[in-house]
Image (cartoon, rainbow, N blue to C red; front, side, top):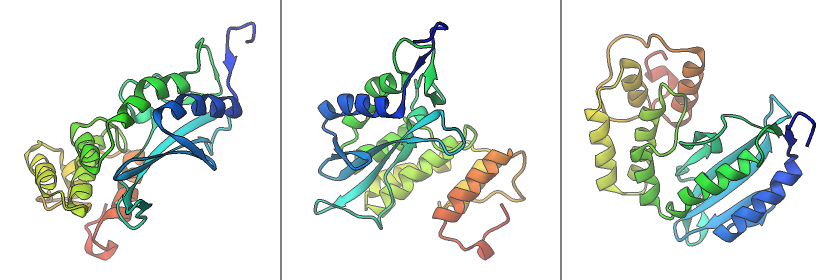
Length: 227
């Protein structure tokens, strides 16, 4: 610890600490990831370094649907998010230096991530997580519509018709902004599209929206209204 009271946590140190806290939760280390298999899902956790800042460490979390014990890479990914997307996260960015007495990244993993994954053992539970808004998606302005859409897409693609209908009813009931409603329509949800073009979107909002729409929308660029 330096005289200023700032501590440094290397990626190697964090990797060892993550193994220590994840192993009792059922994870095993495979290559560069920690893996947890349930009856329906494979969860993976990866600790990496941000491309734009070598002093920032990113903890990415994702899941795959299992078919006969093997990942189905063609199916929609049930959930992909970062540690800082969890409500209650102590940091938006986890730097390798911090004034905290203990590593915030490891503490948030213990306090937030592990309890969350402990209850996300089935596809239904992940759909319900998205409907409840337990994990952020996209930017602040479009997080809720993307949560509802994630729930609807996952439920629809896995024949969870009751949950798919619930997600659609939420999408039809919420008083969305025109931009949010347009995003849901562009992503393929069968709801009315507002007239006119999107307004008042920040540059970040527009980049995220385009990335989601072009990755997941059933419509080709030529068929879709301008974003």
